[in-house]
Image 1: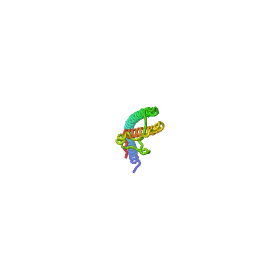
Image 2: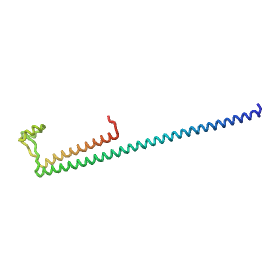
Image 3: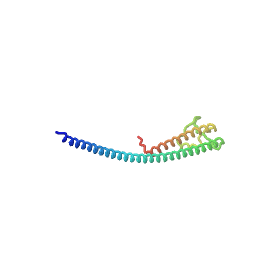
Image 4: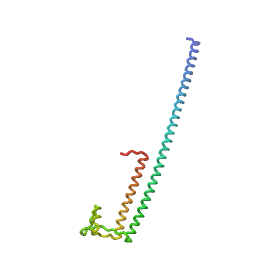
Length: 170
């Protein structure tokens, strides 16, 4: 093959290679651009979904916070009312307006569990409690009542949070 025939062939091959390389580059650039557009679209969709989910959770949190604050206020009101009632009862016991007694039988304290028996036995021998003992028993009962109210408020708060966030418990 002579150089005169070889040169045009080499030039054609070189032009073909350059054209192919350029076309392949355009295809690669177009593929990359399409991938970038798809990624940007998915990123926008994910960001929108995240913003909506965040807004839902914030709304739930605000509602739960409000409900918990209302329950705390209710507990404070219940505790204040109970303290007022206990204070009034203690004053009545100290003033003698209320007298506390327990039934006695044969010189020993007998626990009465049947209220109908207690009602039928109004004339049974009873021992009157002094004011200090009555106040001590009232304080014990009041502490128990306060603890019960606080535990009920805790249970209410737990149930509220569980129901608000749809938590599944076993």
